[in-house]
Length: 260
Image 1: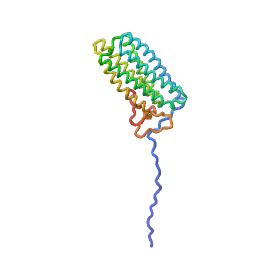
Image 2 (image 1 turned 90 degrees about the vertical axis):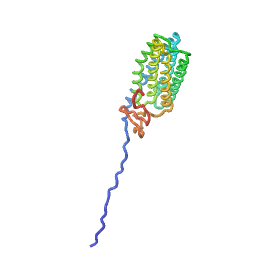
Image 3 (image 1 turned 180 degrees about the vertical axis):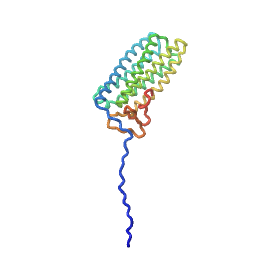
């Protein structure tokens, strides 16, 4: 009797497709409108406060012959240009279309801030100008130190949820100006109490280095934060995402500690 060979049949392998690493929840149009409106309000508050700060600092600095206060006032003018770029961006119907141009302006303002702070700090170290005592300057720096961190955090939070790299970058500019407020406050106090005129410019040089780094990131226009409601729903390979739906590219820090 002939024995037929055994035939093994296998079912066709099921094709599988890897799921996206992360699918950010799409933001509703109403939520996007709310976030955009918040950013406009934060930017308006930043511009208003910095204009007042610039006038007070420049006036007090000229009266007291304080290079630190004059530098603080000019820094406020630079920050206004950064905030104005974001205001221009969100004044349009499609803010995302103006994102790249706004980032260029913000990047340039970071570089201008770094250049001015560096020159002013070197002048102070070389004895061409010292931070002198000014009661108005001390009060102004203390008020800025109390107000600006909250404004920076609120704008950054809204910018991260909306996925606006320019809003996040501008919030970093505000945070840097908070550090400058602390530098001016400590510098004026140390110079008045102990005669340490070098403390202010040394700390300012450190801030200038940070400003250059942030300026390079903004100028490059890296899509660090991708809009959670845009068509790009998957995070880049190796990227990360936070609970607010911010999609972060590799090496970016927009989804990490707000203080960075």
